[in-house]
Length: 390
Image (cartoon, rainbow, N blue to C red):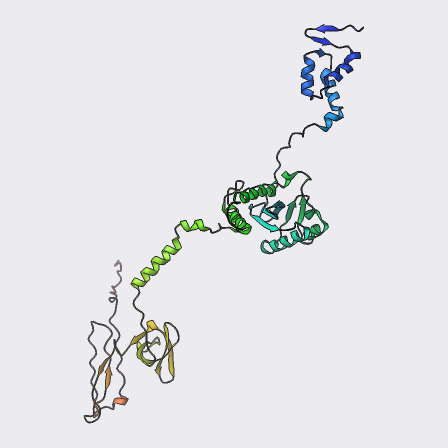
């Protein structure tokens, strides 16, 4: 028999019996930590901890049932420099009897969702081609290893359009975490709207509008602001005061109060037209020929001479700025003659001799010209220069 020595409360096992003792410790296929704890309660020999680790590693049953190793530290994707530089795509479903193609921009977090019946490579290419027609081609495209994305047809589509195609590690969805996380948010919101009596397209539109206008937890800004440079207008904007609308109403009201009534002229009406020719009189008599616009007219000032004028350049000569003297022609030999006073209210009109048929032919007499109004500004006082007498 082999003699066993004791040391304290543990038994020192001789080399010949150590293998049998290790087999007894591993009968329950415990992990290494529990086997060491059990051994410290009964036995000991030099190097027992290493031998316990070796027997656990050599057991095929323990190797097949061991846990996943500790997850590696989080490694984020490189931050894109511009919008639509890298996009992440994935399929959500079957969900609500449909498949949903998810596309998320890595820079702005702008999402696109397209419901399809069959998630095939041809359908995926058709949807992406329509999307790229609006947004342009991305530089990089990231997806999982679904058959729709790994097919030769899809790879040829990305290569032909100059898109760098990146696939994630199989069975590791965290690599495409941007699209995977949005899939969870999308499904959760659509399930929450299950009791709402709306079509799937209406629910999807409401969800996308709210998501795109809400600040993202990563960027701190709304996807619409980063992607389009502005917030999307929604019904909530009706609660805010519209400064532009209020100022437009206020200014239009002030213009109505301050602006004078619009003057109009009829065709054939006698008017005075402003004369801008140098050395000429200020106003020229004429007659309205036609109305060419809301505020513009053509005036015949002399035979063959027609001016195109604005209503601000016209005066009514028959009502406001003419004084018609009526005389009877015929037996007493008198004619009708128009006399135009000065335009300044505080200046008396010029004295004009009324011609008669005995002295002057009325048809050949010149039309009186209105005098210029008084000077609006006082005359400038010119003082002699002050000189220094030496």
